[in-house]
Length: 300
Image 1 (cartoon, rainbow, N blue to C red):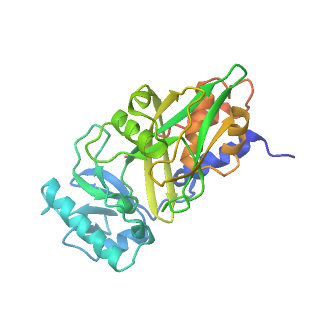
Image 2: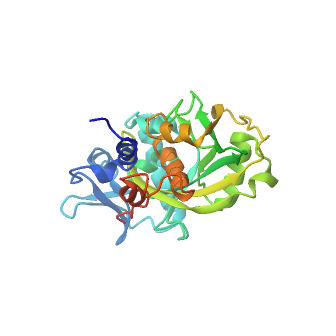
Image 3: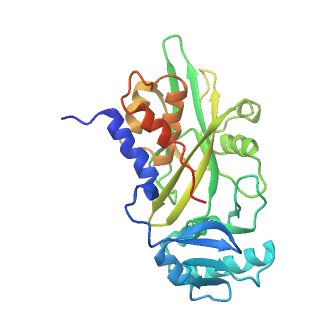
């Protein structure tokens, strides 16, 4: 029996939500500061962190990794944690640290909560902390149809090179508002002028718990739609995009189920297709499970 589009799409969703698809999560233990959990750590990582007891206190009985109580400030935690990550990078312990970006992410309970420390982006997955980003669907109407702009990631990208992507997207660095960040990414990645990008409409979010060889990624992506003029042409502006495509939604729909997209970007497009009535309860048998799978509740 032929595999349906919905079944292929659900496999992409499950790949993006890989951690929640695991049959056993027993090798992961909470990462805490005091009594509050801020992340989740795999066994391969916490065994390495246990070698630095002045910073990471690994309690085998309680099955928890804690930051030392001696690190009582945001600044001290930031300094000591990132010193260890740099040491692990120099020793080539974790492959993910080869993608060092000199970009700091806040570690917090939620997007609006104040950070308890800052961590180098390349190492965030080792502690399984919550991460946030923003993605933009760029599209336009013709008399006959709606078309969407799709980008292809550069071959030099440290993650998912050559995969298809949304028109603009990026992680949220410390101290930047979501809307400001998507406007910045629009210009950097697609040369969309600021006055045009500022018209982007906030349309919600998706959430999932990704896992791969780099670590654990409980992520939330804030989504934007931007309707562009039919004669607008994006231009690669920062070396992160190899090429842009302008496709009708039929083609976009097929591509997001094929594995050719970066997984979370496929979910961003799926959300667009659902919100715009292109994938509905009447034309897709797996509609309910697809909708639900786009909005995972993180376990901490």
